Length: 98
Image 1: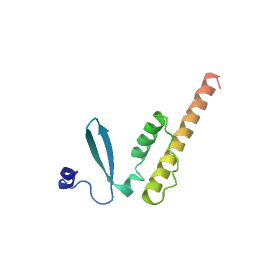
Image 2: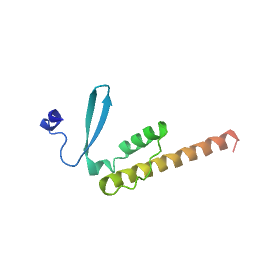
Image 3: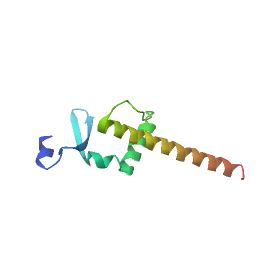
Image 4: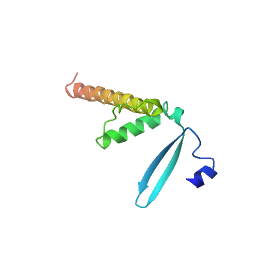
């Protein structure tokens, strides 16, 4: 963490991702926390990964920034579901010759 801070990482209001691999913790500075709320690529990737693992994003009742982040993930997951449902319907209609 100190190394990242010395390189101007982990600034106030930064969004970070922590991942533990065996005995090592990987720290990724994802940038400004407010900007991540509107970063569609990040939200789609995160929501897809959660769904792939069988964890559907849901509102955890948090307020503040974390609540807004959860809502953005829930909304993104809903959009992904809707897109997948439309694609399934399109394929079904194509298979039926419509």
